[in-house]
Image (cartoon, rainbow, N blue to C red):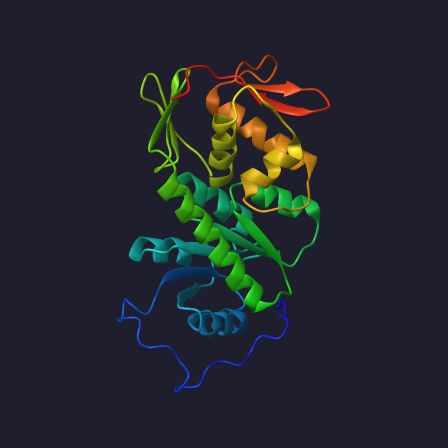
Length: 258
């Protein structure tokens, strides 16, 4: 299925195209576009080049894995509807292997699709058709947020029986078990660590975990809290770390944070 984008310009001619990718100073960002719609993929590659984003396009999950092994990318733009493995499966796989930012594209506008994608670890989503300039803005926002997080946060934070590595975005238990976190899970945990023993509403947590204001799906933040509890080994029937405050939100009750 071909999903059209609004106002996307024609491909660049030879005089307009960016310099060769061998000029490292030219390319500030490298993006991997996973979309089986070849015309859209090629148009996006040309358009992103205008903003110093070198994009590589692939058709499916197998080609995505090969590209990730062969080259470093700063962000993955991942279509939901793909031949073979769909975008949700690939998003899940990416989150088990890497903390690379993921922006999902979907022609389906059901809130459930967006929620599932975000809960699997996507950093943002866009519905087709879309304005290509907005795609650029979303990519830049995601990368700015990730870079700011990594530059401003301390490398290791200890709380209770856990250590959080904020560079690798991993939890390390007292016995050395390493538990990787998605970007959304990491941001949510970081908000809790910064504001311990305070009741935080779902809206506050959702905005902080996503890094921008979006529609406040209660189920989305509840599922994210549930996933974080599972990784922390926090019993959902009687949680000791992330406590539910009925009608108000959640409270992080860790001790000895530092």
